[in-house]
Length: 306
Image (cartoon, rainbow, N blue to C red; front, side, top):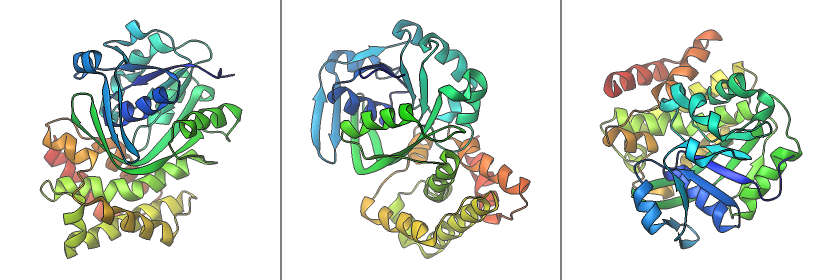
């Protein structure tokens, strides 16, 4: 059973990993961060979080350049982009002991299954972060929309350990709910990620506000959302009309927000094309649901991001 004050390892300390790790540390948890480009800056200056509920600094952060240096943890939280998943299992091995829990906060589809195959489903949890974050400088994270985390066990119903992990986030000031079906929740998050992350890149590098005011693009947003909901329905997951509308309305107050895929694209980094657009498209074809907009967007992004 996970102890009350576990050693928590954050793998991937960009915007998502640094933000949630910083909140957990501020709440009293023992957090250790795997960092690459920000390592020296964070070791010297700490982390600065410009959050919706106030700005705070962590002047002292346990930051490492390798998982071997970090050593075994009780809870490992993965916030890497899925473009690094071909190296993920080897990266994690130095962090694991027999009872380590692994929580993946990665976008799209497939990361839970990858981890379960490598380390056993009983060790794997998944979390979906409905939040707006950007890393604006080394060790500096800005939070534009507080959002929430939906957290669940992979391939099984929630249990006491799942509830305990959720409790850590709640104590840290993060709204966190435990879900019965993790895969269904992943499809729910695709409702936002597929259109807004995708069109921000495909339409020439534009922010969400410009997508919503453009009649053609806003129509594509709704069409892509409807296609994702149709695939989910064929797989047995119900995404309500009200949920689709809420995702659109919640995007309006974000202003000129750059989705994470656009940030990566503009910086010349790999975009998570396969996990966010490719895998949903493959699943749509497998259950024989036509998704012409998703297919167009997937191939457009492959061309732009290759």
